[in-house]
Structures are given as C-alpha cells and as structure tokens.
Image (cartoon, rainbow, N blue to C red; front, side, top):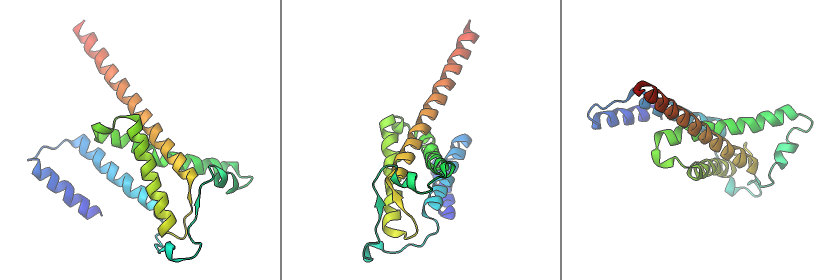
Length: 173
C-alpha cells in the first residue's frame, strides 16, 4: 500500500507541474498513515474467512451499551478505556476530512462519514473476521469521535481566523 501511495503522490505532484504545498502534503500523508492504522487496529489479526458459509457464525450486537456493560463486569476502568479508545480512534477523521476536503465542512456530512466508515468496519468484522465482535457500541463511539474531531477542527479554525482578524485590525490602527 505504501509503495502505491508514494507512486500516486509522486504522479500527482508531477501532474500539477511542481505545485507543492509542504504543509498540505504532510497532512495528506498523516491522513494516509491514520487510515492504515485504523485498518490495522480494527481488522487485526487478519484471519479473513467467509463467515456466511458457517451456520450461526454471524454476530452483530445491536443492543446499545449491553456489550460494553457486560464485557468486563466489575472493571469500570477497562470499560472506560474501551469507550474512550473507540472515540479517540475517529477524532482524527473529524479533523483531517474537513481540513483536506472543503465540501465536507458541515457537521452532518462528518457525522455521516463517521457513521458510514464505522459501519463499514463493523460489517467487515461481522462477515469476514471470526475473531472480532461487531457492536452497535462501536458505531456510537466512533461516530461520536468523528463529531468531536469536527468540533475541535471548527473551534481551532475559528480561533485561528479570529486571531488573524485581530492582528490585521491592530496593524491598521
């Protein structure tokens, strides 16, 4: 994947006749590394099988917070870390996507992207990985993470432009 990515970015650079924006390129490559990390963290240990062929092998927990509350009875810290981990996993999505793609700078779009990305992961886990359990809790926490990332992006962006506006106002005075 990395070699294909480098080839793609090199061709993109050459096709734009040398227009190279260093900071944007760093962000794009960080986004690529983030996507690879999410794939690894959610699909590892990579035992892909056809779960549809097995009788009763498909499982998707649709009871919100049931699995979370019963996964480690008496171990509140483990439950909190599980929840926080799922939220933090998607915060970068809510930051990178609106930064890189201006047409996604709306809360509803980021919410939809977070939900659909999480749903894709959960369905892949359900149908192709026998060692992973797909839960609606993950959908909830991942979507929440994307929305929190978007709120963080919007807050920082607003503060940045406000600071620039104040600086310009002070220079002209």
